[in-house]
Amino acid sequence: MANLLAKALKTIKSIYQNVEFKRFFAVALVGFLVLATNLDSSIESGRSSNSVTRKLDKVVHQDDADRPKTTGEWNKEARQTENDPGERAKRIAKESGEALKQWSSVYPDTAKRSANDRENSNKY
Image (cartoon, rainbow, N blue to C red; front, side, top):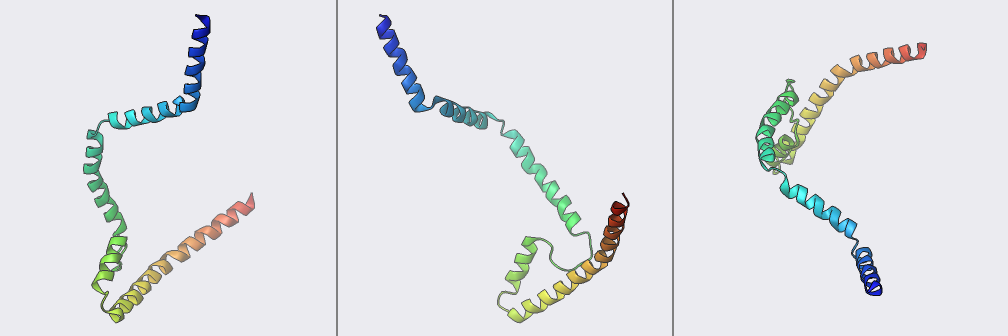
């Protein structure tokens, strides 16, 4: 009887090692957690993402520049001018000029603050 029990335990142990029960259990647990989570929270977050998108759009478009700022705007403009390379090049040149003008208005202040910070860090 003891011999039969020892053989059964040995067989169960070999099955446990071969099947890698720990990994299976971990995958099953993760699957259960994913399936058991409440879907209402994801639906709610979908509704609130519209307000987040609107707020982000407002921040992105707060300056007066006429150039596109998002990938969607760039793609829309590219579709509008895809058959007219001359117009497309003209828009790109105009928008590059606006971007350079905007950058040049910000750069001196940034460079000045960086130089001041560097001087202050060298004092210590």
